[in-house]
Image (cartoon, rainbow, N blue to C red; front, side, top):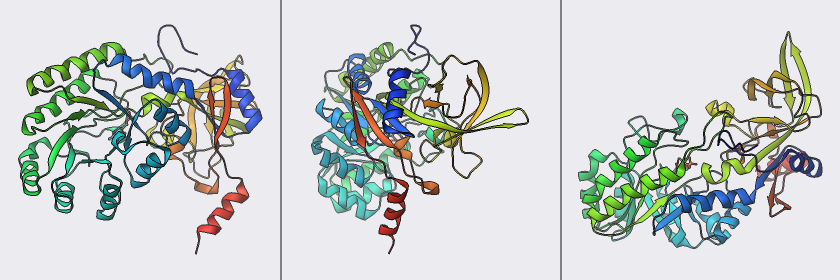
Length: 413
Ligand SMILES: Cc1ncc(COP(=O)(O)O)c(C=O)c1O
């Protein structure tokens, strides 16, 4: 589906391949194209030509072990946000030096647990900074500042400005310096993350400029981390961002800063969506059709616990009728099997005629889909398959309905 004019999400696995996988493994089914994940990871290094560039894959986007392993082999770094993410990263084989921990609203116990693993901390509040300093004086840390720029594809995905729980206000830098001094902490990194799915390049540049203005207060910097947020197209008429030009501008801004700072620092980014979103498909099967006085309602065998972005953010995910791609288009509400009225992947969406038994592919399902999944209504999460170099492999097993019920019993006391 990739178009020459660079509009819309990329469909790197064709309909035939997706139907074959659906028949072979059953549905609902998550499929990931490993080659596209590697391509996206490599591309960032081509776009951002900085000798000390480090790409930290933001594993919250998708913690699938096969994806983590794939990126680990390429030497990727990891952005982690919870103790379990850190433990998983270490168990997969990431060296602690390639892991950055940037949690928010951490407990003291969690702080100690992660500290013991030896990974580097990014701290985003004065309160945590003081507690960390008291517990671990003389250590090296990275500081997360609020970049004071509001951007991102939904208000829940904007992490800068006043209405956010993230980061330390830049106005509070003198307070930061007092805490640093009191506990003899060494600030080796600065961090900001403005939001997810940022379409306005100027806002990214502004966040960078705001953060690097903090540089003058911290003479021991080794790196600056500009977070994630690289947008990919979700809608068919959305133009792909020109990341080549973007990369040149980012590099120029950083290069000018490093010149003034007097040291060539490492430049970090933490993309999640960019690396994995387009690699993923959720394949579902239609089991029920209704006509509510002209409104066509499609019932499928999946639902929002398996892909929540439309319900949570009103996000658009392109949907393909794999079984009838040439059918005449009609408008449908494409719904799931969960007992909630909001359980819809798309409303009033034009799709080639849908029949009971058809397989539908929901695109851009690689980021923040399985990883945001739940077992609401006690429905097991789907199987995950990876396709790479023409090989297909189940990379996460699914539980049967009975196994899930047994799991619940097993955990109950
Ligand atoms: C601190 C931080 N870094 C990186 C990311 C990844 O963002 P994205 O997937 O949009 O690249 C997030 C997303 O929430 C984040 O909170």
